[in-house]
Image 1 (cartoon, rainbow, N blue to C red):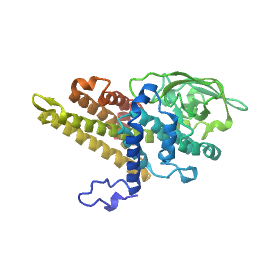
Image 2: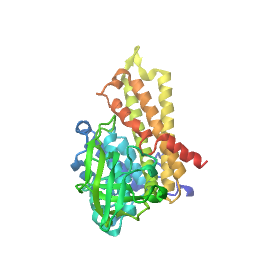
Image 3: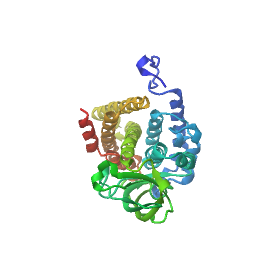
Image 4: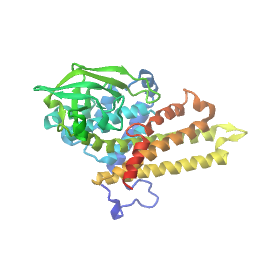
Amino acid sequence: MVDITRGAMPAPGDRRSPFFTEEHEMLREQVRRFVEQDIKPFGKAWEEQGFVPRDVLRQMGALGFFGIRYPEQYGGSNMDTLGSVVLAEELGRSTFSGVAITALVHTDMASVHVFHAGSDAQKSRWMPKIIAGEAICAVAVTEPDAGSDVKSIRTTARKTHAGYVLNGSKMFITNGVHGDLYCVAAKTGDAGSGSKAITMFLVEKGTPGFRVSRALDKHGWRSSDTAELVFEDCFVPHDAVLGEEGKGFYAIMRNFQNERMVIGAMAMGEAQAALALTVDYLKTRQAFGAPLWDKQAIRQRIARRAAEIEAGRQLVYSTAWHSAHGRDVTREVSMAKAYCGELVNAVMYDCVQFHGGIGFMRESVIERMARDARVQAIGGGATEVMLEEVAKRI
């Protein structure tokens, strides 16, 4: 790992980031090639069908994208937080954020529960399949009346001599329709137990009493399948517990940091792509006898957005670097999630505006991107929640 504290800076004229190693840059190029060859030509069809085909996810697994942060013993490449940032940023640049979030929920929001809290037996069984893209993961925490306020979930897990019986529902679950393995939060204690009432469980597709209630029709991320899940007397054995009983809340909070980091990186990838295609459009679109790019007000707005995007990228990179070095970055992650989630929407607003009428048409890339970006200020922790986390630490 490059240590920027020791002056390991690029040579003059070298635009490579000091935060990334050669291995990170090789990963970036590999993901970028995959995006160009295997996502962009087919993404519109996946938008129509509402999910990413399983063979594409297996291909991503075969290329190593699903094992970036996991040990070699399971088939991973044992990289660090910056590896996840590279993957998220480049998938965000694809212009198909539904594809991006399908992969990133699997890699950095759901399977992390299996790896961090799973028993040796659970990891031996599932991690090789997760990394290969043979078992796609979802994390089921959010409910109709509980989002960022995890302690308010109502799904229960009643302990019996043979295992646990789950009852309740989950809402807005990415990979919920076509997933194979679900990391489910449920209350094993009474309401007075607070954060100690929540336990995480592994629930496999096909478990009796567990079903997809309905696929959800979304404003954006339309190539990502999203579901409402229902548990009705769903029995799971004792060895389905992820980690220790009553420790689920802490696992969720720990993994939120990684999730929010990844969303920030993804948002900055989206913003970069949107700005680039808008600049291309402005330099060719004629109005009043000249390209729109000749208008000073437009150029300066684009320049300001470019500066803000670069600031967001560097905030994400720096935070990821500190995370990779074992430092507590809760404040910085919350800042990045709030800043990047809002900024990507501001960028999309301007890009749609400068595209004019075509920017409002479903046939344009920027129209899709603007819809996809809206949720970045909501999912994984709304901006208002993130700012409260920052305020607590000021």
